[in-house]
Length: 223
Image (cartoon, rainbow, N blue to C red):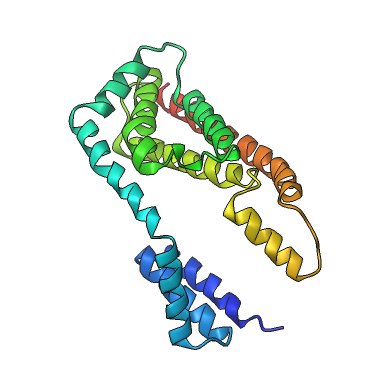
């Protein structure tokens, strides 16, 4: 068995670790993987072009960005901060745990685009998490504020990544099914989705505990 094509994975890891341009890293990794797998470089580029052309409708989502920009310009983040500041029981940890639940459940139902960094985290979740942290633990330092924002972004990532595999019609499940089928294992998408549930539960428990621990750490620093 030829394991050289797996070098593309190592290239992705190294490129991201060195903070190179993600698009360049992914494109180069795809080219390297194809060539090491025995494909002609032109065939790899052709496959990339065909995939982009077949999925060009994805670019329609960029239309929503100007709308979000206008909402932010007219005070969307400030409104979100004001709203969460009025909730006495709200803390940064509790808020993000609730968002994690929401993100996982909606992704598991196939509504993976209902959230996301540009349309939800930046204009709503991150400002609300900052406001909750400030209300509970007083003013935040620049480093603490950045960590709160990072936790908000990570919560969206974890919720989507481990929630979407529960939805049996998602592309990742169909890809896994195809790989198993080529090796002689006949599994239905529903069977694979069911086995994604324990992983999603573990991801929720681990990341939820990290959120609450970080919230407590902010409180201990303030005291």
